[in-house]
Image (cartoon, rainbow, N blue to C red; front, side, top):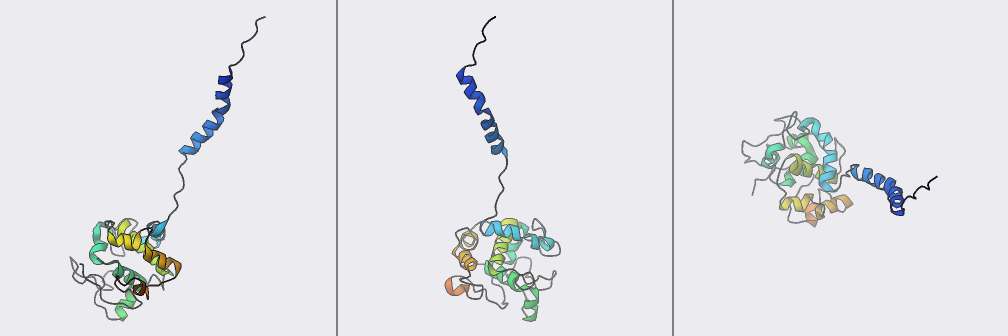
Length: 197
């Protein structure tokens, strides 16, 4: 009868850590859940309400398109878009405003009720001012395809002071220009849109 050779220590160590390595390998291959953060991430989450009219990719439908730079042509200044989304079509019609957004828009200005009715995001959809900012950021720089420029940094970046002021409740659209005097006043009443430049 021959005595069997013992298993080398290095082989035992290797075999003993194999289950741990397997667990770590499988864990590394499991995709991590992405958490929406910042104005763009939160806006993308809220955009599902808007997508029913404007399309999942901003291509339009019952509502005007955002894709292909259309949102930037209509609203060269984010403040005009925020005001329109905040107040909705009916407020503009009731105030006798002939067009929203850029009155010198390439392809013609957009008149209220010329292409469906935009509900008031604050009154009809129950969105707060910061919710409206989040979704407008996503409409412009997500599905709208606009370049992330100085306006993006000012309004839509994760370090935006304006976003922080709205999120904390320190300011609303009605008084935002008091804290940030370099912006176009948004307010609580419809006004004619501003031209690009």
